[in-house]
Image (cartoon, rainbow, N blue to C red; front, side):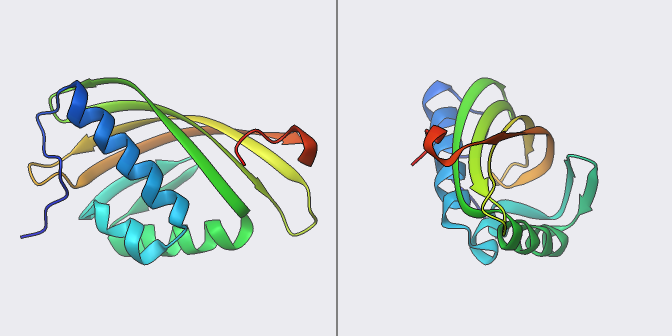
Length: 137
C-alpha cells in the first residue's frame, strides 16, 4: 500500500511538513517523482485544464517543465483541517525566448487516508518580470 507521510488528520507541524515536502518535490522538476504524491485517480484543476489520474498528472508536469524553464517554487501553508489544506505559492520561470515570469497562485488540497493527494485545485496568474527582479534564486 502506497503511503506519503505525514498522514491526515494534520496538525500544524505535519501540515507545514507536508507543504515543505511538496515544495521540495516540485523543485526537482521530476514528473516521475512528483506524480507519486497523488492518488491513481487524482482530480486536478490547474488554471483552465482539468486533469484526471496520475498518468495525466505525469504528462502535464512533463509539458509544464519543458515550457517553464529554470523553474523555482515557494509554497506557504494558509490553513488546514483534518485532511484538507489551503496553500499559496509563487514560482519563477522563463520561456524559450528568455522572458521571465513570476506566477502567483492558490491551491486547495484534499488527501486520502494514506497521505496521497486525491484533489488539487489551483488558480494561477502570471506576471512578466525582468530577470534582475527575480527573488526566488
